[in-house]
Amino acid sequence: MDISKLKAIIRDVPDFPQAGVVFKDITPLLADPLAFSTVIDLIVVHFGRGSVDKVVGIEARGFILASPVAYHFGAGFVPVRKAGKLPWETTSAQYELEYGSETLEIHTDALGPGERVLIVDDVLATGGTARATASLVEGLGAKVIGIACLIELEFLKGSRTDPTSGTRIGRGTRRPSYLSSCAPPPPDTPRTAWRCTGRPPPRRRRTRG
Ligand code: AMP
Image (cartoon, rainbow, N blue to C red; front, side):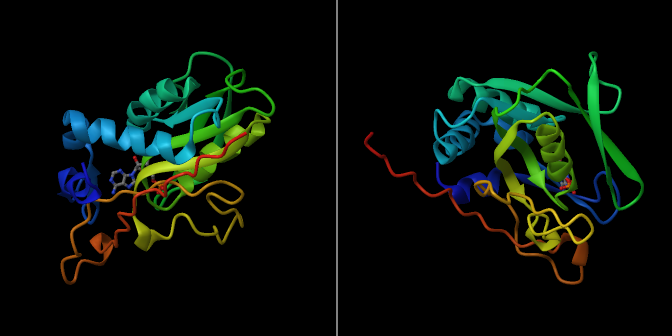
């Protein structure tokens, strides 16, 4: 299945969960066996078997994508959840939203020093969620080798340097594989006027060794 078909299958839901937001609904993609397996394969091929020890999924849609990726890598799956949802001892990271703040948590024993971690989520918007997750991973001594998001809302520039913290999504890591289902933005709707990349991840070269 090619990228344009994947893009077309993701549904834009205007004004959800609040006015002015266009929600990227990936449920039609998840329900389509070929589309679902294609995006999982794209992520696995992009990062390569043997390069990842643990796959971190971000609540909640990130879990759905991260689990089969972990299975294909032969890697473990680790959940990052909103505050108060994980049952064991946790460490947390707080980050700012447009209105208020959000706290994410990870189990303190979920990752070991030096483990190679791939972070997976459905949408990269401002980048705050991915950035906070990367700080949780690094706080446990593990190494973020990549961040794979299905969709990037490029107009929000989430993968660029954060002006307040100075951190950049993906610095020192491989770029995420981006797919997007965006239609051209309708006129006079700036919040929804996102641009799409829709680039397939580059093919990895085989090396003999
Ligand atoms: P951000 O921290 O701003 O990069 O937001 C990313 C998180 O919020 C991801 O976990 C997404 O699931 C969710 N998210 C943000 N914007 C959207 C959107 N337009 N449609 C669907 N999910 C979104």
